[in-house]
Amino acid sequence: MSSSILLKNGTALLHGVDDHVRSEKTDILITGNTIAKIAPNIDISALQDVETIHCTDKIISPGFVDTHHHLWQTQLKGRHADEQLLEYMATGNAQSSQYTESSIFYGQLAGCLEALAAGTTYILDHAHIDVSPTASRTALAATISSGLRSTFAYTPTARITSWHPLTKSPTPLEPWVFPNLTSLSASLAAGWGSSRVQLGLGFDFYFLGPALVTELFAHAKDCGVRTITSHYVRSAQMSLASLPETLSTFGVLDQSILFSHATGCSASDVALITNAGAHVSCTPAIELQMAHGAPVAWREDIPGIHASCSLGVDCHSAVAASMPEVMRTGLQAARGMRNLRFEAAGVTPTKLHAAMGVERAFNLGTILGARAVRAQDRIGSLAVGKLADVVVFDAVSPAMVGAAQQDAVVAVVMHSSPADVEVVIVDGVVRKRGGRLVDVVVDEVAREVLGGRETLAWKDVAKEIVRSREEIQREIEKIDFVDSKERLVKSFYVDQSKLVEDI
Image (cartoon, rainbow, N blue to C red):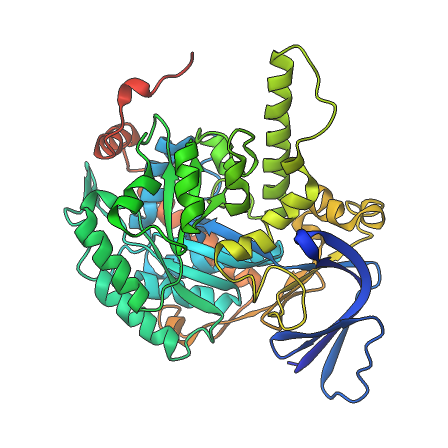
């Protein structure tokens, strides 16, 4: 591996004042894991061991920042396309109970690699795969193996102990939660993950009350956790209560908090979020499908939330793990909903809303995402001194040619797909080259789980996903999902009078 990389003569997307993105023909020199220089015609004659990647007719973008994702769910892909939230909770989220250590590793690894192949270089992983005392360590080992930059949000999980009938563990917060936080923190602090992967906390069990919540959050922060993420959907199908108000009452609402979704939030919720310096991850593809409500990143009635927003994929078991696809899904849905409002009034808009521009969509998946996890000084844009998380697009591909020469940001947001991503660099290391994922070196922690395997090509990972998916599917086919869904709905205290087929 070369100690330096020169990206030669590409069109770089560079952030300036007020997050405006300009396209500039330039070279970018990466030394170690850092961007060392951005300038035309960089002289490398005095340097040794430099790999030159020629970027003529290429777009050089900051790596995408995904602030809400469940990376373990790969083996569940294909089953949720026509499901909404309550169906998914039974057929998807709760199926973590079917995963073995091996399927956890491969599901997590494949989730990371799908994201990397699409140009995502950072993910806040809401890792609710804590189904055993060792599950989270195995999943974390997969993330480290992949080369992805991530905050692994360790998440206490409501475990399913039986499906016949569906029975949950009577202990929502398992006895291994606090020790695991301590152990994982110590391992990462000792160099596991090389600082590329950090520890976070995912949490949704606020019914446990303020004493336990404040104890857990304090313990997490003592373990070095800087980001705590929680699902928040304020709707008839889940809850009409205000989670920001609950956290404020508990005394734990601060800048470390990132709410995923926040659909249905009120103006008072927004005030609490913004005053605390907290943030929101909007996941439009899932929110639109699963009846969460309107994605808040573009809501016109509460513009105060806009600066606090970022974007995420959420479940790649249901939608593609492509951040440009997330950008345009949310953007076009917001435009469509706005147009419907005008249509209902019998008039036609003459221009787009200021928040519904392509550049802002790009920023939601780059620099605004970095701010949401308080990493804007390290990732989210291309700048000297920042970490070398970089994506190179083919500007003359069938999808991007013409658009890339007119407006490179538009080309990325509105026209690109993972097939147009030629090179992905994370922490100064090439993870995708020539349009193909680079082989993975398996982290030592996971080698015993994998029977001693030290390296994996994508074809090896895919083979194991197919095998473990079949194992999980055989168990899933034994489940009575009508009964299981009813039991889950009751355990969530959902007002079933609000669940209707049509109006």
